[in-house]
Image (cartoon, rainbow, N blue to C red; front, side, top):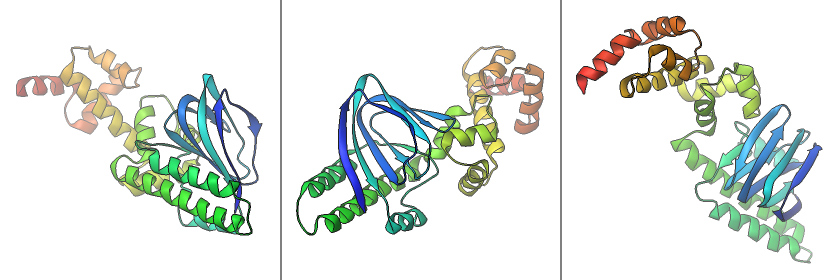
Length: 250
């Protein structure tokens, strides 16, 4: 059932709280931050974020404010949607290349909710379904090109974070993150992050004259000797030899 729908335009400040229902918020203009427990996420329109029952959260717009559409919904059907994957829990935020379909679904739902008639509640429930379907289609389209959880891991791969810390930033447990990454890539989280780091190191070695120690620090290793051993073991040649081979091929 639809429990509420609306918009906000201007400075926004949501104090720490937990809802007893689901919420979806579409940011259409502006930027700010979202906090979910100990994890913080930067928000920049167009982006959609989820809030779940009992989840401690807060969010704030930047000084310039933002524009958003929001909906609150719950009931037995909402749990069914969660089981079917409509309320994707792998990442709490989703960047939208084209937010128009979701924005239209929010607008349709708002018009239905404003109507005063015997069928308003039923029509609003149908409007929530259409909104969730529009969001799922966009998430599915994005998953086929850049899966959100993998994109987030690649973005943070060079940071000195544990698997548990990566999971908190993504709003899931370490076990859920491990299962998701292995299901998508066939690798563990640490191995996937290592591949990202080594790929970045290869680019720096091939396309720059940075000293090996600098390259090591650039990809998250303070110990250049350890980096060299790790690179040699994984790539099959030392960083300096890799650079020489790439130079010969140019």
